[in-house]
Image (cartoon, rainbow, N blue to C red; front, side, top):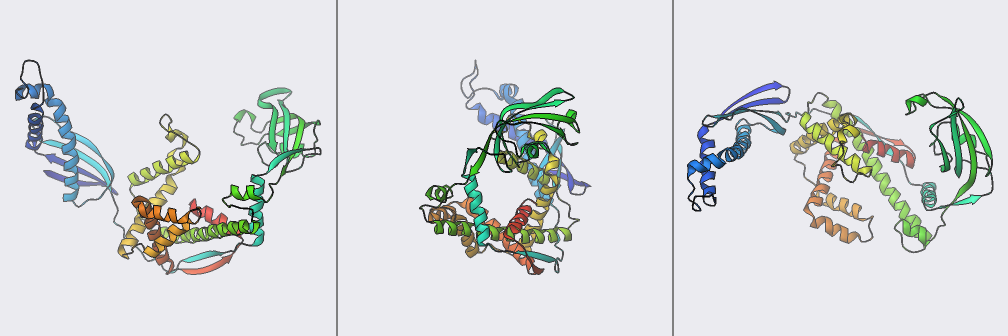
Length: 442
């Protein structure tokens, strides 16, 4: 087998591979001989079909099959011979597939970069310093009570936060416009669902009252024909409802996984979950800053676009599923969710993956079994039967490896954090949670 290699640009390589004709022809003959034993053709006894006939009837198909397999295997042999690490699948361009002549093709692909870790010591990290207060717990419980509450009709003027039922007709220069009218629409005041001024304009209206609102559509409104348009809405208030918070009872507690009617036990469970979320948020924020420092020190590291494309595809599918997409078979996801939406984050993830892999390898880090156990126990603590969940993780090799990978990554972050200057930044519980969410979306 003859191999020549060329660097085309950056991480891209071009391999020209030549395979002796004998290798292909011999394999074709072997397969035809093997198939001959079972072939039945009119005029011939089973297993007695002449090779000349076999080649005429089946030679072309078998040769195509053999060519594909030989190119695949010879490519693997070639990259091993040249000590290359392909990133992604190659593009194969056949040069000569003619029977009786040496097979020749060109494979174009990217390789993994050589990662040389640089010194990142001395970078600064601000660690959020927050705690869960009784007021924070009260606020979350109020959110639960609102979620489980019910809307009750009231005989008073509408206020911010009420839900109203309205009819409205929109006109522009005295003429109705498309999509500007509706009957029996439910609207929560303060939701921002309508254009600016609409919801504010009907605050104070009572059931049966009518009012005309003179408004202007935003300049960036999604419907171009209405951008910046002056319009009027004739509104009729049908009813006003206010939210009645769900009582602190057994039904509410059960909706959030707490059995019984013990309010103190419910508060304790809510507080414990909040503490867990706070720890995770702080960890995510610190990790983000460590990763930012690592990326900044290796800003010139080139990454294979094949890996970035794979990451983009994964992120696209994940977003589709998060928004309730059941099947993407008949959808053009690239048009719905174009590459540009994910490219920057995907490149960041790929680069971090390469850097962390080299860091873990160079520092000979191994997942600490105790930390793996602790991580699994943390995950299991949100279930009613934690021990069953723990046993499930340890009995499921794929899931266990996923936890070990996370722990190993966390240990890599900890090893980098030892080189940082860490200071605490006091903040509220909600601020810390917000910082953690931003970090997870980076």
